[in-house]
Image (cartoon, rainbow, N blue to C red; front, side):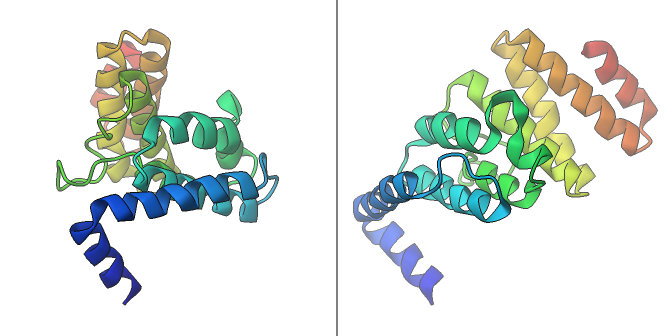
Length: 184
């Protein structure tokens, strides 16, 4: 019932829908622990990400909430320290445009700069692989390599190529694994 009415409001009153999410985002952003140390705190931050993205503030949310507070930069705290892979994937899914493709992991939202698009593609692929959804992780990871190359973000592109190689190696596709290893 809640989903039905949410869809109705989004369809008939898009500005009110975005404004409601903006208010929730701003409130929850301030009320949640800045750098949580547990799964409960990461789940709360995942909700902050969702509301911020529904409000249309994708780049701000990616930089301030997802990267700084959930991942804590290169530490990837939510993934490696807490092991909140599911919450991480739920959060990163908010940065993808579901209207442009029938595949969820194909197209990051247009509101992200190219380097950030490559970043969310890489994170989606990594999370999917970590959750055992290996074949589903191939598409966003290979797209991450392409997007990062196009943005001339060479170190990040090499990192994504290494991740692609690992995925293909896990699937036993040695020729593809070698191709991406060499590309990296």
